[in-house]
Length: 484
Image (cartoon, rainbow, N blue to C red; front, side, top):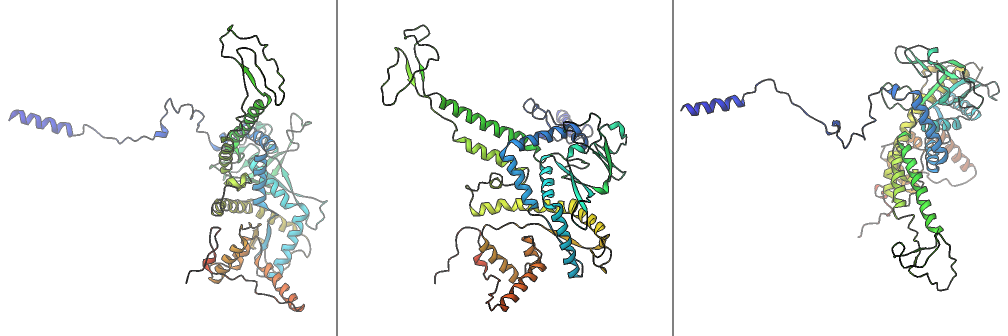
């Protein structure tokens, strides 16, 4: 009995916790082991400003520019992205109650945009955002501009936005050329008068303090607290280098194999029984003739094994990975859709077009609205340019249209559009906006065309395509009627 009681007390004492218990968990990714030590060696806890320091951004810009200047794929990807985002340029649509005043102001803004080359400058800014990580533009007055509104846009490279000597501006809220207030709003920009890369640039450069109201800064914010941008292709720069190195190595191997027609070799040991042959001696070969080799020697023809079968697959995978950081599908980056079917092409383009719409919305918010506000300020000083009675233009509603994207099957898209309109699941404004057009302008033009056709005695057919839901499919096949 005593032995049983001792055993019971021992089990009770073992089950009772001796103190506070803690639940400990562990993430495999947080463990540093000999296997992953080198992989995570460069991980740091720097802030966004410290990680994107002046020297880091300078190195990334120079390498990105070099790669785009010397790599055809990098150049093409950058141009394609700028062309798809900007296109032929944004078009303004005012939404005030006075339709005629809207058209008048829109035409005036369009004429001014053509005079200053706004579309081209926006494409340059978009390419700079990809290459340099950021783009700067200064709103200036250009007396030589042949327009009643002499507002102009002067583009500035990221290298020029910097404080030459940080001691000149001891403000704690300054980040390499940009001074911020206590709320984090930019107050002024320091812009060098000459580019630091100019051959005749002075050692100590002068700079201008430009108010933030006159400067447009375009970049993508990847981290909270980030004030300067880095190239959008930063993560792809090592891949571009790998692509070029692999292509050059494959070409060198193919050339080396093609340079040598054959090689002499012997199975005899050193100083064995084989006729003497001069090292690297050349033997001329004639066509359709037999050839005898020296005793103990054989001839073998080199086989050109490069480019290997994996060369094309390697390039496709690398390009696919490169384009991913820009939300661009492979067939757009490579300008090659040979491996795609209709459904795959449309599915890949959906992600790409969504990224473009996000990019255009960011551009409209950060750049176009600023430009429109500055243009209206200047236009209000020109007598008769802005109609009276519309109220303060700061309260006007507006939006910008960009070029639409062409459908790979226009007939199928037209039938789908007709179905959406018939079922009232869309509007003319939405459908025309998909094509980058103003629905009011297009309807007015169409009404004028129909009126003119009736005057000329021409028959005007119903322009609305007819169709049904069964006509809209996502493959190459044409729907067949059901068997009776």
